[in-house]
Image 1 (tube, rainbow, N blue to C red):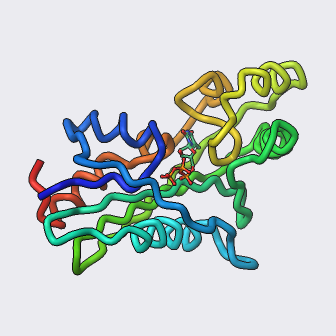
Image 2 (image 1 turned 30 degrees about the vertical axis):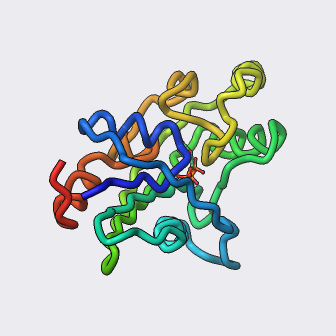
Length: 187
Ligand SMILES: Cc1cn([C@H]2C[C@H](O)[C@@H](COP(=O)(O)OP(=O)(O)OP(=O)(O)O)O2)c(=O)[nH]c1=O
């Protein structure tokens, strides 16, 4: 069986390597990530992972793995910021509060798809304007849901988290290993 990583995220590739898995191919999906009006974060995230998997047609000997990470403040979805201003606006909203991070995975062979969503909670300390400015200057927010990465310098803002660290970074390793086994992929 060939493993296809349906993701352009370098984090997901690294996380897979932690399980000793090296994909046989990488096929980044190109999908519309616009939420539906009033769509809630968890169903949105599952729909994104499923849509990414649907965009890739696995051959009979292939298993495709796709994922989506969504940052949610209550019912609101914070996507990947378009620029530093939007990243700053997201971080001001996260400052001093708890939010949730949902990561959904979709694993697909030629006739079935398995999905799973993992919800974690993250607390941010209250950020000063100096901290915010210095963080934005690092550029670390680029391409990251909610405008930060727990595995980067923003870790200094996070006194507490609950759930799955690997899921927050982009791929829940426990659930990924479980679903790959369920799909008949033996590493
Ligand atoms: C919250 C958080 C997100 N992220 C990243 C993981 C994801 O790459 C990104 C969310 O965007 P995604 O749409 O999940 O993924 P992507 O566009 O990077 O890649 P692809 O669709 O090809 O799989 O945010 C972190 O790296 N650390 C974090 O702490």
